[in-house]
Length: 397
Image (cartoon, rainbow, N blue to C red; front, top):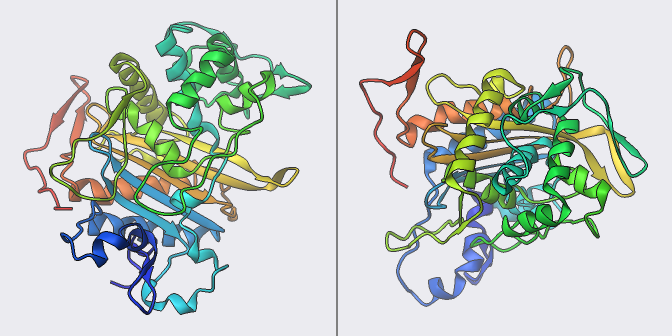
């Protein structure tokens, strides 16, 4: 099937020895002639992810991209795409330093920006450090060390955590993390797995880049996704807990009907539900609106940050991301889309709201019916959601 899932499948050498991807990880069992391996990848879902990343590359002339779609309850990866694409059938066309060799879903680390904010709010709510109705002063920049942290736009004098997420307020998020405190923030980051390599049945999972210590400045910047670089898979593993009653599930690419999902509790079910509801508001009213696909109740958050380079940041290059769970009222899947340095076009920028969020929306629109997610539409008169009469069939993994 050409380049489809090329980074996941990997390749063998001329002697049939696995040297990349799943082929490498499972080389011993495959060579021993044990039971055939079935992946969790859904072919149609994988195709959709790869086509949408390719379309985004044409639209934004980006350096690279990644997209992952995971079952929130089982940890099964339904699709994992990296752009530029890699075709294992033509491996000789890609020298070792070719950009297509890198699986950016697991092998590249990024400062993902504001997609971190829901996790910060979740940690603070769960610890009882803040409440949903508590108001925070967002009228003035806040000081962190010798730096002043501000918002991209002024929207109110004070705001609760819902409006902080909807308006993507850096100021508000810093107030929230200060209420949480460095000690509890550090413990949450460690519990979430964001301080370690993501576990997956692939070689090349990259370690995060962490600040030497969480002082006042780094505590503040990490709260809104800066000063800490992680892989898309590591982030999605933690983020997906918001769609699984607060439990993190170990991601996997190997389908095994006997497998019992490995879970760790990150948040209480109540906190997970609260933050998912807040993210739904962000998609309905905030920068995530381009990902609001009718019927599928996407709950998510955009993230745009200047790209980290040696010695600082490139003010002319961004990393744009969108992370989501859907459907919001009973999440089945978690998705992340990360675009590396998308270029602005005349009449529009390249922030996540105009780049990563629309890509994520198109992915949801394509894969939700494939994966058996029944659409439900809001009845304006009753403010309730009603199911359609027909439910699409589930595609087998």
